[in-house]
Image (tube, rainbow, N blue to C red; front, top):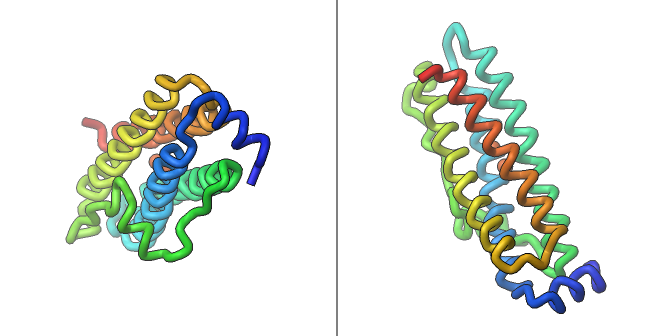
Length: 164
Ligand SMILES: [Fe+2]
Ligand SMILES: [Fe+2]
């Protein structure tokens, strides 16, 4: 735990435990996105699937980085990420990605990813607004702003692929 790091945030009037709960839910979302994207990259089929799979792998790596950044911040604030893997699904804001029945339907695969990214964007936007309203935790603000930016890029990338 970053003792002084938590203290300055607390002294600034931030409800740190409430913040930690929000970060833990987002942390769960990142693991779930990483899992589903890694799975999708492996099971997609069809002529265009290698190109799509490599793009999915790229964003999966970024989701894994996001969970790492969130875990570090949770610990710095005096919290701890869930010890039981099954709790991740229970607490997640976005607990699954709609894997299409037919993974050769690349449009449906891309749409499922866009939907998942939309859920992430909503979550980070909400946390960022909360942080803006309290104005007193620039460290978490910076992390969430950075993650939100990447989620917006993910959505945009797959919207471009979808071409609609
Ligand atoms: Fe993410
Ligand atoms: Fe993402």
